[in-house]
Each structure stands twice: as structure tokens, then as C-alpha cells.
Amino acid sequence: MKKSQIITLVVLVVVLGACIAGYFVGKQYFADKEKKEEAAKTTTALKIDTSKVTGVAYSYNGKTFTIGKVGDIWTNVDDSKMKLNQMDVGTMIGTLRNIKADTVIENPKDISQYGFTKTKNGIKPKTQEIYVKTGSDKYYDIFVGSPNPYNQSAYYVMIKGDNNVYLVDGGFTAEFSKTLNELEQESATADVNQ
Image: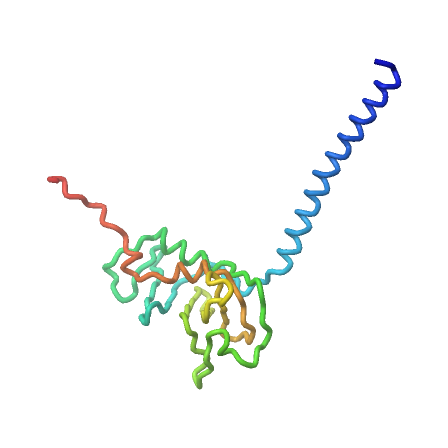
């Protein structure tokens, strides 16, 4: 092989290596840029310091369930003898920490298309209402309206005192779609005779 051919081959290998490296650097750059743009599109609908939450009341299937904190233990306010699974309740409360919205409909004139009805007492949601109290006597009232017709796992949400409608991932609503019996701690006792 001639010296000029070796030089040409080395130059081609270097150019090919530079092209491959450029491709991966460019791909990563655009992926990072897209993530930043997506993050910029999301808005925080509600942020709650969940370590300060002392009580939650929520509606589900036409019934209202109330959970309160006594010391560090979550309890059923209506039946203090019922032992709740603390991890499950903690997960439920944790979903309220930072509710992100993909879309914000600012001050809509007709909220009924999103699953809300204005009444003389305030807003009545189609799906459910979640009422949160913190130790500082701050209250949050979260109204869950209709699911998005194009994405059934996303719901329209309103917050008391805020005229905007938010389209949020329904993950937190799924956590509040449980009865307290479903949150009851399973008995650790087993029949040893079986």
C-alpha cells in the first residue's frame, strides 16, 4: 500500500469518526432541547407541602371519605378503630405534592365543557372533590371535572380561588379512587391451625 493511500485511508477514518461523534452530540443536544421545551410547557397547577397535611376529605362513588393525622398516624376519622395502611395513605397524599398541568385554559367563560357546574355555593365537579387541610390551617379545595376526550387518563382540574382550568395527568385522581376499606391495613394474624 502506498503512502498516499495510507494517508487517504487515515483521513477518511478520522472524518468518519468525526461524523459519527457529531451525529451523537447533535442527537443529544436536540433531545435535551426537546426535554427543556416540554418542561417549559408544563405548569404547576398546585403545589402542597405534603409533610404539613393533617387531613384529607375526598368524594368517590358518591361517598365522602375523611382521613386525619393523629401524631404520625393516618386514621379514618369516622372509624378510629380501623387501621389504615400507612404506606398506601402516604402514597395517596404524596400525589398532591406537585400537580403539573400540560395545558392551562385561562379563565374560561363556560366551565361546563370541562366537567364543572357553577352553583350558588361554588363549583360542583363532575368526577370528584378533594379537600386538603394543612397544619397551618391552610385549605386546598381541588375539583376534578371530566376526563379529556382525547386522552382518558388526563382530567380537567380546578382549584378553589383560581379561575383557570388545568389539564393534568389523572395519576393523582386514581389514588383518590379508593374506599377506606381498600386502604385498610390487612390483618397480620394468620390461623396457625391451617
